[in-house]
Image (cartoon, rainbow, N blue to C red; front, side, top):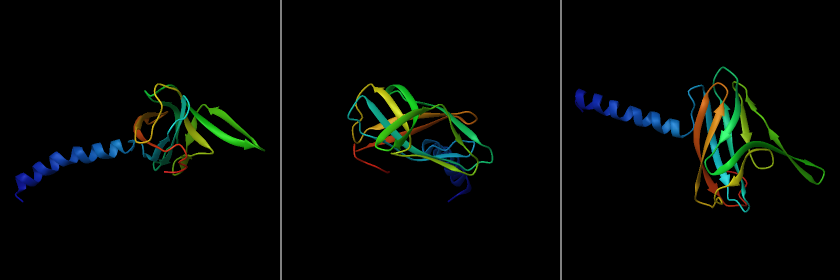
Length: 151
């Protein structure tokens, strides 16, 4: 390959690689968002799950989640008290440097409240995770079957 052609190829492909990384949920601060998925809804409320890995050297805090598919989006924690399921809103979610936080069924999760349309298997849900330091990180959550438990 000639030098000019090689240089052109690198100049053309480099932005594509950068875009692919950004769409996967990498934030410039060292936050890596993975295992993103949502569950098909049976009511006007849905749930989304993901893992946030902080590969950076500074702590950060997830302060908000937004999505155009719901009127309201909240971070929730679910726990069992005997036979009673309790759910509570979490105002923010710390993500310490060098650690991961997993949002999964039966624990922390993203609640999509007053869905504009039901979530059905095969759809994708756009989510914007807003961090105190890193700012907004956009990810897409593929919708899995209603009984799905892990991605």
